Length: 632
Image (cartoon, rainbow, N blue to C red):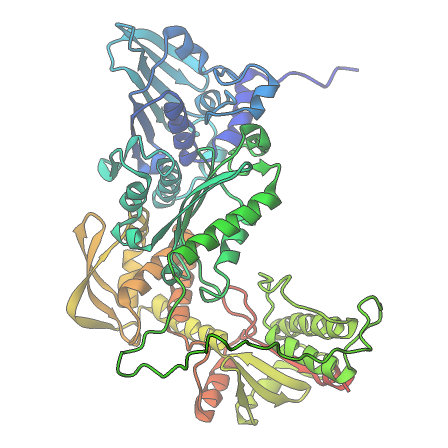
């Protein structure tokens, strides 16, 4: 029998490694800029063509390389950063695996010109598909000049998965922003197809954030700082009034490296609890400094997921630091009174002692009794209340961990509501009846039944199988989404001119997106004229958005387009329609008349699929009469 195990050729092994290291043009920029930073560069230039698919060029003024080092740098696992496995846990540099250049060279054409300060001549190397085609001396500045051409030219299956130029450019800008926010002491520039997107001089951290994201960001930043034996924390968090539904800038860095960390994100958001509306997000730029041996950055090929030894303790410190910043700068709303209208507040006498409020103790309460329960009636009403409050549990599980199920009866009721919501969802999709004989046709005359508004959020009405509960905001979003989507697709929107044109400024990343979706914005009804430098003159807005801030709505639409991706028109149309609907829908707490409720229900159940909003949140649910009967 012939042997079946064999060693892969180096070219194939390098291409396989490239699948982890080089995912798109932004991966090249990340790896090479990190190498420039490790080379002590003080000025780094990034130039890209066609979203990086045609060319990516990185120029730095760092140490440069000798002729031998320049040749060895393209060999797999060639690195100056580590010598033994233990060095992986004492990393103080960026790139360290020695895979980047070898992987890039396996799937692209590379040209390198580099020179050290002590050398009179530099080295010029040209590589195609891991094969060195040219190596010669050359006159060049101190530092390194890498040019990467035609990414995935020899792997067509990989190249076809690259997105449009605008999408790849957006990914490059995102990666670029993550790096420049860590090194304000280094000057950076970014050019795309000859146009300058960023020119960032050496500056302070706060000014670097402002240079990247605009002058408005400066007034919204609160500094944070703490030094402990476990972790040092510094950076900035946003003021509560600067919270927004979309477009929040959220960055974590550890030891100078960008990272994603949902657990630490929850610590920041916990500090803002009850300070910002539900569903809104805050911007933050948080820098952690820990002992290099207490983290492992080698858990993910892109090194953006980092493992900590003491995550729970750091969580507590982080939350306390953010809370301290919010309290120190008095960002809790206060009530101001005019001098003449100031209410009379009696002053307590200095000799008066405030007594304790008497509390009646329950002699029957035993905290160690395992079957301790509330009265059945109180438990049942509590379960019904929780069922109504949390009926909108959706795929995002936004209330997970927040429900307090006091006994198994309440747990049964709430789980029944959730399960029933899923059944209703499937019911509407299939048009079939459930066990009680309920079908979508039963909702046809729902607006004619008695109804009332509950807590300024829900519309409650009796139904053939129980109680129908509708989330008024989500219902209106579902209705408006269908209307806006139809108008976008049929280009039926009417523009309403502004008496005074408004100037709207976008960051480089936002400007990339708005250039891509400008025709669709014009179809919606926006009239925009570019003034250069990411600034636009807004001269007209869609009719029917009275009461909304046009500039804020524009930014929401841009971020909706960025999040949905810019390569598929239908997806962008859907994102724009949803953003318009969410911005103009009735808000929670808005009182509705009987006529308005009837009209809302009629329009909702005229939609083919009214069960959920376009982003998957439940619009209505039915509390079955069997659930209600079990309470009694």
